[in-house]
Amino acid sequence: MRMPSSSSRRAHARIAAAGALLAVAACSSGGRTESTEAVLPARSSLESAFASAFTVGAAVNDNQFTGRDARGAALISAQFNTITPENVLKWEHVHPRRGEYDFGPGDAYVDFGTKNGMTIIGHTLVWHSQTPAWVFQDSAGKPLTRDALLAVMRDHIHTVVGRYKGRIKGWDVVNEALNEDGSLRRSPWQRIIGDDYIVKAFEYAHEADPAAELYYNDYSLENAPKRDGAVRLIRQLQNAGVKVAAIGTQSHVKMDWPSPAQFDSTINAFAATGVKVNVTELDVDVLPRVTGGVSADVALRGNATASANPWPTALPDSVQTALARRYAEIFRVFVAHHDVIDRITFWGVGDADSWLNDWPVRGRTSYPLLFDRNDQPKPAFDSVMATARMLRATPITP
Ligand code: GLA
Image (cartoon, rainbow, N blue to C red; front, side, top):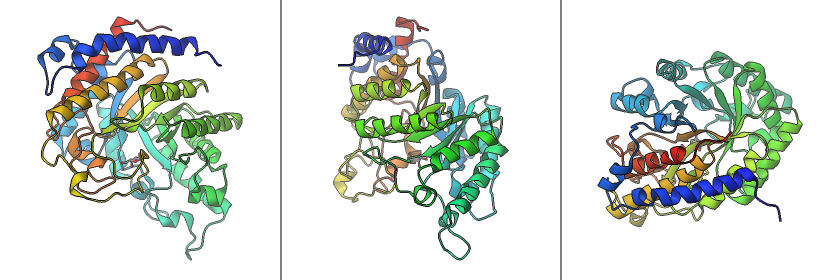
């Protein structure tokens, strides 16, 4: 049996110690409690609380970065030091038609991050979703050849990455290339170009901005088959001479999935390949599961029954408390692994803007984030902040 590495043993010890330390904070009753407040560090923003460990960010929408949502914009600049564009740099928005780029929103996004001194992330260059059909077809609607699709991909990557060269620190180059079993997804990219489309995308991105960090990003990576597939993919990329700076684990998670041990194994497995680990799209879905699994595949849909939307007006205290505990449990693992984690990004800021209000069922009232529908901190915010105490309890080891 393979023994856990010393860094993994250290991480386990830190998780256990911090669990005891935080029990008082996270187990206090519903709502924001006095005991939680009492043990909070004298730091009020996520970015400063975790400054010695990793950057903390959020996916932002155009209302926020243009200032139309002034309250949201203020909250983002107060709490976070890194941002990811929820939609505006996806292919269908930035390159909607052949030969036509729309950089207005992308420029506003990058300007917002620059103005606020934030680490600006690019999302995403090559994905099967939110990519127009024309990308894969010629003007007569026939599927492109491998060479023609590579030329389209190269033009897109060079144009988009090139425009923000030196301003966007890192790119999700390829998003969601793997199936749940760890095999390569039969996306149009894979079918037309072949398995090396991933290597090509990374090569083009590197040509366009040699200093940019390049990431592979996916969901369900906490499950062993997909985690193993991602490790194989990273090793293949490395063997092909591609420099992958980090794996992004989206971590659209549930109340009961994944377990802390699953998070732990995934972080260790990725760290063993020599790349950093970024948590790129964190949210915790408290609503009933309607798709029969834990996959965050955007194509999944569930039935809009009344039982699928149990809390249309407010989250009961008991669930609020359970969510706070769940976030503390998750952050204990992240903090314990701060030596390999560069960034934690939430997929949204306040609950009102979360994609989980419309996926996998439209029109539900979802509560997955740290800030409520009025952008006020929830008990989960306090419990996450309290995990930063681990950083003081256990000094950072080189
Ligand atoms: C995936 C993508 C994101 C986003 C979410 C849902 O995780 O990577 O860009 O579309 O789905 O919003």
